[in-house]
Image 1 (cartoon, rainbow, N blue to C red):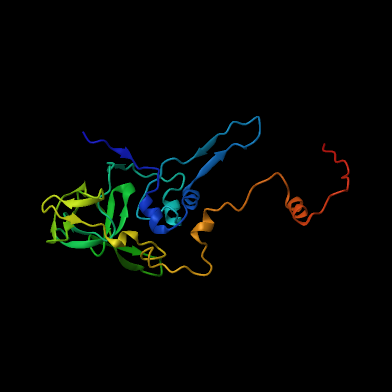
Image 2 (image 1 turned 120 degrees about the vertical axis):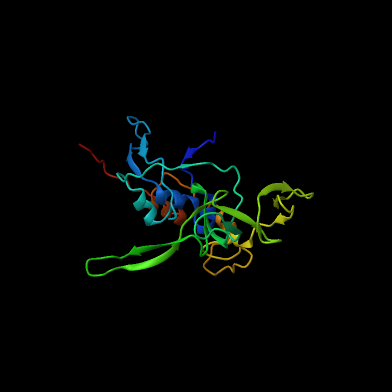
Length: 252
């Protein structure tokens, strides 16, 4: 019996790496807090009511479309996903479609969505949608690729003979973990396109700009919080001593 689980709440590392955004920003963008008790007060327990489960689609978790699809009160049928212990298809891989009108055709994976076990193949499994329709405007029809489930609707292609094959992970004599074709026994390297992000193609070819923050500075802690106001910190930096006695203040 296959073990199924509800859509995972954790955002895929593939999506975060491609976006090149901090994990704290992604978490803050998608969180939906409905109610939260005040913190630091003795009469309140730390309680937070927030959305725990999200419906992942082709929209990125930090976009407005993702938030709109997960708005409170919107009912969507539950989707169960079979967890894959180890992801084996990456961006830039050549795969063969196993179902639909494009069955038998091969294409390049341009996006992966591990939360739904999806891959999107460039130019294959396309569908047409009408958008922008209004009473005075008929709208326009756009063509987009529909996602495909890995290991069920697509198969990895062996680059040595361009034939679909099963694969398994093995270790080389040097201890490197590689993908190996079960049919031919040849190594299937992970494409360089898998390192591509929204900002650059590969890390090695990225040229640092004058306004970029170096990596050594990012890890350095430059701010230390203290129980002082901004004016107090300025006075300490400038060596100013406060000798004035404040008047008594009464609160009713």
